[in-house]
Length: 396
Ligand SMILES: [Mn+2]
Image 1 (tube, rainbow, N blue to C red):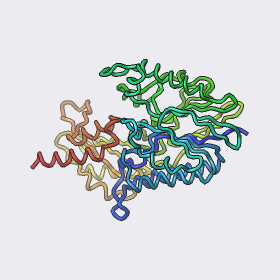
Image 2: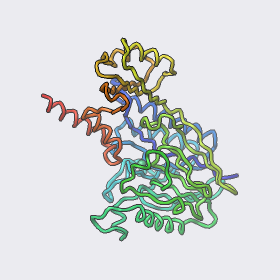
Image 3: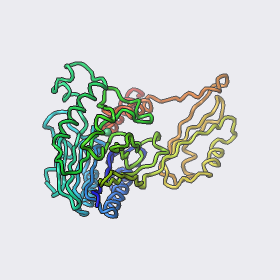
Image 4: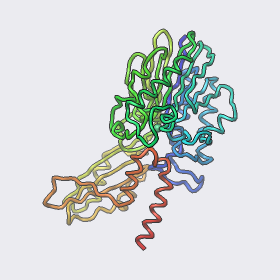
């Protein structure tokens, strides 16, 4: 019988985008979505009778998860533990402490020393006995620029190019490979970029750790489990190099992307399959409502044709100068089944109707900017609060 593994990553517990505050429980409602998908993973783990679960980074969205968020992670971990599986949790950029020795949001759960729970905050190999044989997990948490400098790959004050990251990650992958017992199945589990990534995410690199697939797709690894890119994808066949993708949708770039986790079987050969999680639907719509006498009614008629139950919807309305202003407050009550509705309006001047130019308020622009920055994103809520009070002060 092969060794069976559940590979997941990018749980982003505590991501509050597109949710609302529930005053009765004092939580953001998106936390319920995250728990629902995680409990589905526990069901999958039970049904598939996995030997090990590998969670490859970005467990929490923020660096200081609140008690309700910690509780969601604890439910997930205890559910997995009940299956008897070994659990490996590797730190991603959302939790790895940039200062050596500083506690991360995962430190306390590791300190509890649950049997079969393995926390990987530094590159290392952990070998365990499973019911179906020996398994070695070579864990590579999100590499830090500081480590390049300490290891002599980068001078202080310089910023790393991809080739430097590739050489550094290659060195670690060599070191980890040496620590794999010869009679054991082996996986490499890393939270990082691998170079032929697809999708718009690939454009957002800027000095972040990256390597070529062949730097990690090498013997003795039978499977490479990756985290960091939210779009599920396979980059290499032998051994398979796979991003499980995130368990929930986090923004509209993921509107049409299936969400889930991967079940991998390490036998004579390595086989894997993608299993979906019940991620909330995102729907991205554009409507040209120029010249409509009743733009709200016109939008309502178009929306009524869609399956909207429980969806997070972004509606971009195009109008021309002089049109009746589209006030979304009149639209929302007509669709109580929607989970969330965001409307943005583009106004074209008559002489340049062929160009669609997105307009931003200063806060929208800031929000968009933070969304594109991995370093700022974990603190988004706090930053937006500060910006809002600043904006209010300026307006006064
Ligand atoms: Mn990440």
